[in-house]
Length: 214
Length: 284
Image 1 (cartoon, chains in turn cyan, purple):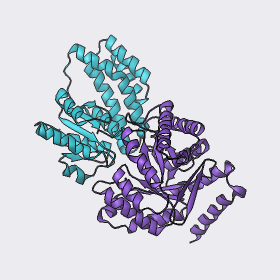
Image 2: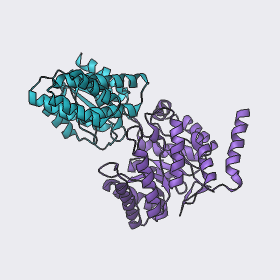
Image 3: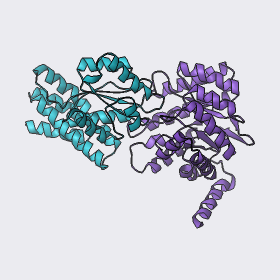
Image 4: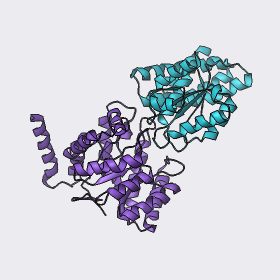
């Protein structure tokens, strides 16, 4: 019975079936399945999609579809984790977003999906995020990694602003910073004092692991 | 409605009835390592080559964008504009989000250029529209505002209305405003195509203006992008786009075929001429 739900959830994610994913998550809660096991099953499914994407066997819509299905089930499972007080193992906590003035979301969302699949706890703040908002989230979630995206040359300097602000408030050394987005280069990342840069979403996941030594 | 643009010696007229006018997109360092390096080092030979190649491929207007990290647009944009003007005789589309770079380029430009772009953001309307008026240019208006690019058609159309109204208020005639309804990737949202197409239809109907579109973004993250790009450009032209910003060499055959089908190519002369040119090139 239990395995049937987990297997169904895995399938729902791989078939991009939001409704099925949501219903199965509800059933999992009703049947008192360990929410951590449910989370694991979903993570495995999204990782399979992510790996295939990384190999070039799947495409952006596949990643979006799988992430949407997981997102449909996620709030229900997270609620259950909170309720039962289960201790969730994660590789680390990531705060991510596209910087202020910039509304490009695709790359940022891809990285967030793949980081979640890898086993990070990801707080995706969205797009057009001000420096203060990044800082507040970093404090709130006690984040290990800050991941910032910028797609335009006009908005890339915003990443520097956030890093300067972190320095000012004495938070810089407590967090690893990775940057990306169409406008960003390795050179620029170094110049603004980020800890790492990668031009691809799968590459960003490897980078995140490297930065926190896991 | 007609939008007239000029270079030193040549006039290009964009008509809402067509035929489609093509704006070449390739002088833009985004995603082009070689061009980025060349711009940084001030080696503008590659820009010259790109300009010539696009005009030979049938570009009517060239977009000029030099935005890259480590490039001072305020210095480089006017410089590159001069180089392109000295290389080819077509009107240019001065492309920057930096109003100072735009003004410096408008100062050196000979003729009536297109400026890319103004948005519905207050800041942009206030800074860019007076420049367009002062230098007698035409401008591309993007349907986005302080809240980003709206997901729904009504809001995008409302921003287009706002841009046209504000332009007319400072004395820019409506025909000198060209609206871009903004292409988002269908790979990220499978309704992105229908939203932009429906916005185009409404803007054309309600405002009667010319429309442009940066088309290539539609296929981001998908395989065989050229197939999607060609289908999209065809649908966009049928709906009201009159001067898309494109990789001219790649999409021109499909655009000419579309114009022919829409009754904008007498005796299929343009289509056949382009075919003959392709044949000649293959023989070489």
